[in-house]
Amino acid sequence: MRSGKFGLSMGYLAAIVVVGVTVVPLLFVALGGFRTNAQINTDPAGMPGPWVFDNYALVLGSSAFWTFLGNSALIAVIATALAVGLGSMAGYALSRYQFKGREAFYTLFTLGLLFPIGVATLPLYLWLRQLGLLESFWGVAIPEAAFSLPVTIVILRPFMHAIPGEIEDAAVLDGATRIGFFWRILLPLSTPALTTVAVLAFVTSWNTYLLPLLVFNDSAHFTLPLGVAMFQSAYSQDTARVLAFTALSAIPALAFFVLAERRIVGGLTGSVKG
Image 1 (tube, rainbow, N blue to C red):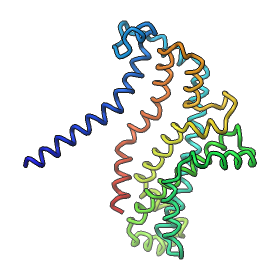
Image 2 (tube, one colour; image 1 turned 30 degrees about the vertical axis):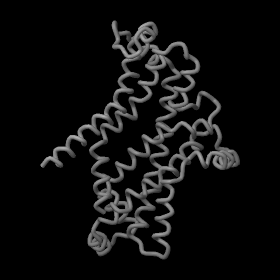
Image 3 (cartoon, one colour; image 1 turned 180 degrees about the vertical axis):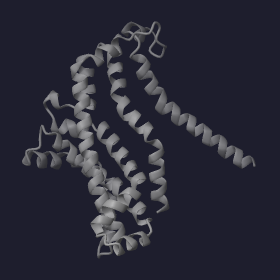
């Protein structure tokens, strides 16, 4: 009993530490946007008093913020669609087909989880330049989708493999082709896992900084992470406005992740069971 209570207490302690490390900085940034620079300089960790809404109003009224937001959304949607579309097809082949070298291919994809994007910076830049994809949204979206494929396939393959083969046999007897089974039966049954990988790919793309920095020089193409860095440089003395810009930049991805949290857990649970 004592060991069980001790383990439970340690679990609560770990949860409190995680919340402190992740939530407290977010609260500091969000609340800092409601303060003036004088308040921040006087008491950096204090609460707003009085509350100032001008910083958020100025950021929301800036056309640059909405341009960065639109660029991030467009790239994230393209990268997510590519990662989920290609990953689902690869997961289907690796889970339902029997062919020589299948496990080797799967192992190759799992090794991609260990491959950091920083290692590929120089060859990726040269490749994109040769293809004429610099200053193009596709030049960011395609590599982002490629780096999301390993985790997408690792999640989808066991989930698809766990779907009973009897369902596929019944579909074939009814005249369905392999593509028909994949499109009309397997994908709808894999919705929890597809939602999980879609959210992960979207949030990863939204927060990516290095790839847009590599591809874009024109500020009109910047994503929100690059926009935050540029805004910090331009308004380095206006800490309150920088905090407001940073807080607003984090809201879309954070809200998207929170709304899809249950589906993420469900998809990962199904993948582990598979």
